[in-house]
Image 1 (cartoon, rainbow, N blue to C red):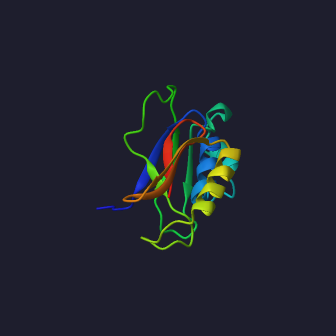
Image 2 (cartoon, helix red, strand yellow; image 1 turned 120 degrees about the vertical axis):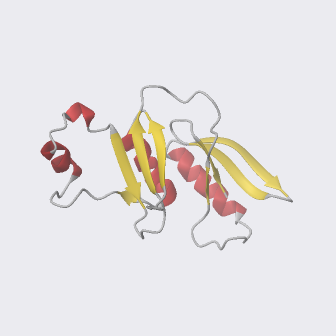
Length: 144
């Protein structure tokens, strides 16, 4: 049984939202399949009309450890709170280590400049410090 994890995100603009999440996660565009040097060449080779080239987009962990993020185009928009969200930690921080609040705030500011929306900041003695953001299409996630 294949036990790899893929996270699928519905989007209006898979390529644009994928570029945002690549920045958030430190991911890269998934390389084109063998025999093709670019995705444009791949999609042309498959005979996909150009108006469908943004139907899907995938990003991957360059080190191969994290799950693939697959973004698929859907016609409807997000209308309610996520039932699932991602908690994104800061690079170099060990699990269980207290976050550097200034670093988390600085990263939140960077992501807001890239299109995220700042929702709320939490500083709870029992649960820790985190900032809730929304990606450019309104999906909530937390910086921890």
